[in-house]
Image (cartoon, rainbow, N blue to C red; front, side):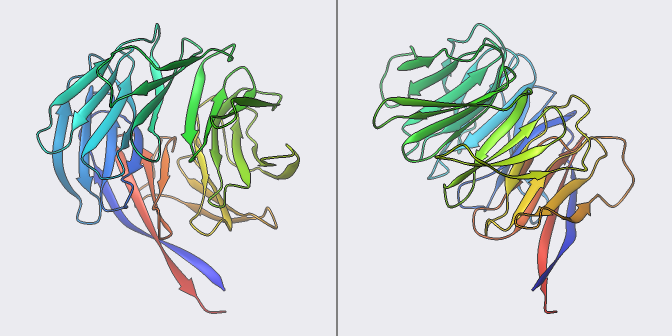
Length: 303
């Protein structure tokens, strides 16, 4: 079975450079984070902008939608984490605890906690059901900027420019650390939760066994250029996907480690692809490209 990818949408978000794009939990909507301090909610399939959220004092770097899509959390260079009511578009709460710009933010699976990672080298866990504005927990193990956080049902996975990925098992209070040898720009779980996909500043995407730390594969060819590139797997855990400084979305076969596609927009671009998001159920990909987001769908080709 061969897979073909088709570019189906290119949306000019009109919010400066788009720093991140994120599907909602059900895949029906997406969020874009802009350098113009705005956060936007879209129906990407129709190319329709549904709402703009303004309240950050500087560039918005990341966002995440809650499991019932009633709330959004965002973070930015203004050092703040903001919880939004989706329907009204108003900030419900501002979480100010970080001493530096906040790069990355996620809800946990029940959307009862918010986890944020900052250039102040810390990861903070916020209980948004309680009335307190203090973080419930602060993870201070990183020695450099935290570039990404991901959350499973019982684990928090963090990546840092100090070259390490850290996995905190919340149930038993254990910390597992793997040293990658170069600044880590993104680390994420595979869909089955068995492996971790790690993007490094040396221009290599690595697939690691989560429990043993064994290196299972290396994926190369894309251009890193000191950018904070994101990577992921597709919905079936059969492809590795990464952004690239050459403005293309690179896709490799997970088993053979061969490049199977280099996807680009309708027109040539000088903008890198930095952020990407994979639909939760289908192989539909979103990626940022300067002021725009691009969307590809898959068409299965029978061999």
